[in-house]
Image (cartoon, rainbow, N blue to C red; front, side):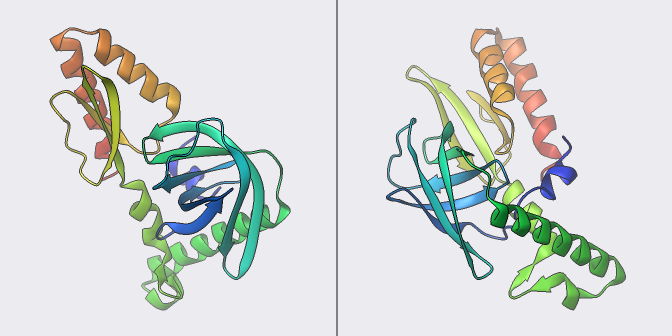
Length: 197
């Protein structure tokens, strides 16, 4: 699925949104109809299940979720365990709002591109330009969020939104490869992040 289409199937977040996952205070960085990505300060078990609660545009959303993947030590992906009609309506309204903002932006009508303090056409870039720098050492792989797409010497940097299977493939290829295949892996990762800068 291309990035533009994916942007319309999620809430348009201009900055992380304060939320609760069970008893954990978290920050939502991405919310779709099927799941969410969140940042956390306290460790969350990889098999956690609980109620995700947050406010969006004056309405409280509550949805049962479980940990689906660990993106790196302070960021996890959740899978929703139920359908939420309110969230689906909010995603549809957010997509319509973003389309109106893009049209307004094309006409040079900045006022119609802003809701509250949010410039809607910049939102996908605000969160999508985050990267994960994966580094390999004697203890194994370590992922760390970064705003810099620079490739490290001992690993690679990719967009934070890359699917798990792509990340796993890159890590396996890098880990089992010789110097040339590691260089090519970094080059491939560099090409993938260049579109998100």
